[in-house]
Length: 640
Image (cartoon, rainbow, N blue to C red; front, side):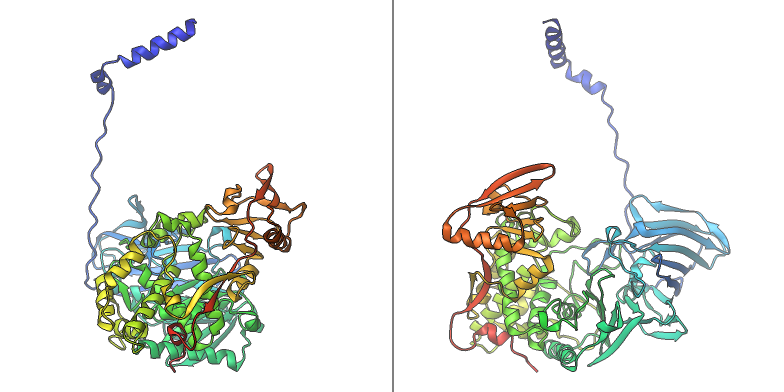
């Protein structure tokens, strides 16, 4: 009683404490003013040409050693920065944490430096009187294991990205900063890049170029290398884990040459003097698909050529990245173009930049033969069905997913279909598929989205600079092809939450999405890569053959039964779990109308649950709805 009374007394005393006394004993700091960042100037860098020397021979330890000489025009404050906001990444992805051993000198004397606390990518130094150059020396410690980031160096190949091994003087448009790069590669290796230069032994001295273009011109180099001329100033540069991966048939290479012909015919112009596909066929270096104006970085698993007939695999990658030379690099959303690598990007129009590129990637894949028509239609079915399982569309508009590169940086999500991810890729594809069907309908088949591609991306032939645009520019060009309420069309699909993905491009094109118990080519590939079962379209579960739960669809039967990502299924209907056993149980439940019983482990807990589901196996496919070729069939037909 005494202690309770004391507590009550203390509480009542606190409540009665004068408010002004509380305020009197509360310190109130005042925010220190933040320095205003000066806008970069669009004038030539006054110091002159930067000299960059990279030693890329330390492949065992995965270390790039860098010496960079930055000429200066005067003494005083100088800020040098590592690129932070990276084009194509649509986010601040510079790997500043991997820069080590940083040392600045001038006239042979070490210069102290401090890191800008408001911009940790920037280093401030004081240039002494009489100095004509500042020399920066450092190492870039590339990942030695996947948990440190993407592996870019192996014993047989490397991917050199200039933004990781160079600093630039802050305060100028990067296109106004000239730089000359030299790289020493391992003996016997060959290198490919959009840059051109002179090779002496194992060292290549590249021609002087502006810093913006340097960062846009990465290198693939390797022990096992082959370059193939695809025509029209386009080269396919291959590096591989071993020589056998470089063996291809004439028919396979003919499809790559056809890709170049079809893309050039589609856009009606080239915006490069030459273009280099950089393609790594590897199980050792990290995968990549990254666009540049005159090149692209592409990584696929081994078997690209030897396992060609087993399915389309990753053959959609090259058409996608090649399209970006026009869509994303030559023409870029105005808020995604920035004058330097410090200025933040705004990603709102990625449903054009990436969405329409995704659309053309599949179309060009079909027109070139890299994908068969059947494989392309199967891909559309899988994409549409997958987007319908994205329950997050009920609360989150598609355009909001364009901020995901900045928000989540592709980190794993526990409930990805409810949270949503970078849906602007495939949902953008579906929107542009419908736009093509509408144009064909409005013009009685005389025009399609091909006409938009030529009118929007095919301007200024031979110009490999950048032309920016906004949403209204897109709408105006569409109206110039076929008058329609394009503003309303886009707003309804881009700006508003929707219950399911638009399928007008399929239905108007002569097909409809249906489900059956047999997987199409795309879903087969997904399950093969997963080494598991993808039943997101039915019971709402994706699970590996060993029982590891990879995805649970929000509000699906699997969700309502209590399943979650990270759980491990141990048994199905009293038998040890396997992928095939799970499929058999789902099939049997459809006929018997009885729940599927699962035993699972989550953390240290074991549970038995019942899946109240009798829909059987459910895989998406497209079904033809009319006679003859519809607009979708015509879209996929070759032009050349």
